[in-house]
Length: 152
Length: 165
Image (cartoon, rainbow over all chains, first blue to last red):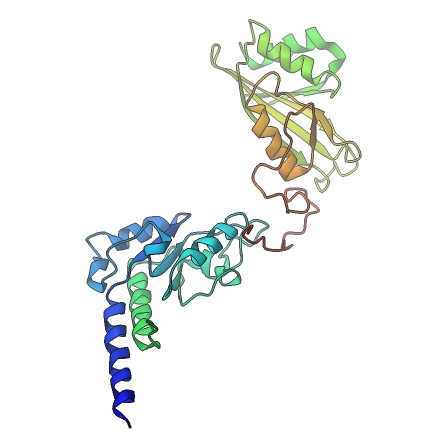
């Protein structure tokens, strides 16, 4: 093993550690799941413990796209554009069953899962998911961020 | 004015234009012919004793799979009127066939009819003659069909529309 290889591997780890604790989220809130998202984000569940306490309401300053709530066909192009405006590295969390699969909105208007539009990293099911599930999903996302190959 | 008195007043003034009337649990309804619909609506608004100054809602019903009414006119367009001055309500219905789903527009009487009629066009495919801007309201232009018609398949998926770049 050469020195260079050893060095890059450690740098990857350091970057992953830093990135998993600096999750600037973009909350794309469209429906009732937003209430549960707010509950998670407030002091009782203290999402700041995971370094995810500061939502950015501009996709260009955000790392993680939280898609919270039902996405209709009419909204789909907007979501897609928001995703494309985010800079790398970026991740997507599907919050609630509507974003995961369409949920019980099996109808003409609803997108049957946002993974038909954009890639999704973590799915948090539930209608709505309890804050505990959200934190679980957030920790899974942290693991994924830390374990992934870091581009810089 | 009591609901029954409203119906009687309309029947007295318009005679044959009122096809039928009924009341259910205090809600009074008159079915009107399409030809006289605008006259009846205007009278409801302008008659001092009626003074229906608010158009609460315009919607429609598809009776194509309704037991006992499969063979009649397919649609009914429903107008809900309310009078702020007298605190009374009235429901007007007009029957429309599938071959000729056109109703005169009420935009000239109540401006809110603009969006309400656009929604009915969007969901049921009923057109409103004289409407200034009859586009879809809730759905997008690329959508094919009218989803609240009973023959629209419940599991039909429309192609996703992409960002316009």
